[in-house]
Structures are given as C-alpha cells and as structure tokens.
Amino acid sequence: MESDLSLNQKNEEGIYLIKKKDGKKYSIRSDRKRYFFPHEWKLFIKQFKEGEIHYLFFLILLHTGARAMEALHLKPKNFNFERNTITFEVIKQRKAKKNFYATGKSRTFFISTNCLDSVKKYVRKKQIADNTYLFLDNSILPPNYDSLSNQEKKKYYQKTEVAYAQMLKRKLKKTGIKDWRQFSLHNIRKTYGNWMRIYDIRSEELYYRMGHDADTFLAHYGSSLIFNPSERQEIMKIIGEVR
Image (cartoon, rainbow, N blue to C red; front, top):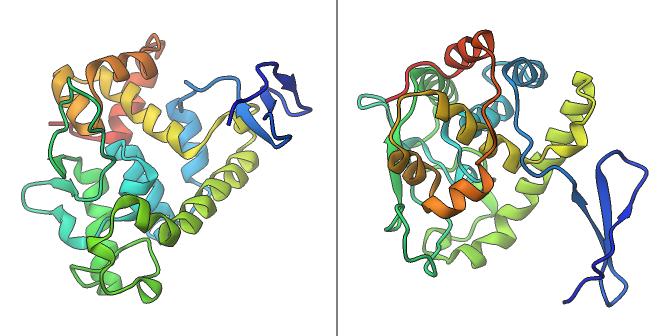
C-alpha cells in the first residue's frame, strides 16, 4: 500500500505520522539510529529486578544484538556454558542477499559471562528444561511449532514481542530520558552494533553475529562513535569480555 509522502509531525517530540492512501495512519520515529549510552542503559535496566525473566530478556538483547524475534525463541539448550557461546536457531532469513555472512539456518558465537551467568542462574533456579522456550508461553504452542516457518510462528510470538516493546517504552519513560519515544526494541540491537565497535573484533565477525551483510550494517550502524573515555570504560564493564 502506497503512503502519502508528506510527514505530519505529531505532538510527541520526534514522532511523525504517515497517512496511507487508504486513510490508515501509522507513526515513525525521526531518529532511527538512536542507541543507548551506558548511563542510559543503566537507568533503564534498573527498572527491572535482577534475575527476573524480563530483566533477562533485555540483558540478552544487549549482549547479543539479537532481533526480538530471535531472542524470544531461545531455549536453555541454546546456551553453552562451557564454551561461553549462544546459538540462535530461529533467525531472520535473507535469501535475497548475495553478500551475506550469516549463511545457514543458525548463528553461534561467543558472549560474555556477564550475560551467561545470569542465564545459568535463572535456568537453574526455575529448573527449566533444555528444550523449553524461555520467553514464550509453551502451553499455547502447537506440538509442531518448531517445524513451522517464521511467518507461521508469528501469530504465536507476536503478542509477546508487542508486550516487550510496550514495556520498553513504559520503563524508559520512568527513567527521565527525554527522547524515550525514539527507542524501540530494535534500538537495543543498534546499541550492540555500536558498542561492539569499541572492541577489537573483526568486521566480518560482527556482521555474522548480527546476521547482516556489510552494506546493511554500514547503512544502519554507521554512526560516528562519540563515546568519551569514561563511557568506553563503562561499556566494557557492562558487557565484559568479548571474544
């Protein structure tokens, strides 16, 4: 459906309204490259009780750069606590991309023990079985859910994704961050993409971890790094060791 190209600013700062040809309206953010600075992230994550499931969800997003859909489909078996790795088995498929580093049907890479220790503690405390989804209501999923396509899965996980998106907004508003409306779940992914650039990590490895090709990464994560020395130190404390 084509949209009216004119943007009409709404009352909220930096939020614009697009009117489609059929009369329907939807909003977009003016700054789609916004990412967390370390002090902002700490204000946000403090809104959750450490060790609870919602805290864990947002922590994993920050430490992996996963898309919300990918993180929602994690199970305990996807974490290797001996090798310090995570495996995303449900990933966004980008078959049209020719220069694509994250080929295949999964992605496996190292993540910090700052994140893994929280996952391990939660799984053990709640005694969650290896093949149980951490963030989805397993009781409503059909027996063949694992074999469904991403599009077929969407009707089962979409409500949870929307709930987390709304939760992000509510919690950010409480922090006092002025432009909290500019954040979405995807901005945590953008935060990971920019924070990882301060580490000594090969570009190809970062593209793979995020499931991007080089052109897409540069187009969407090409912001100048404006972190000062103290902010870089804070990022390294939050993320921990990166391999």
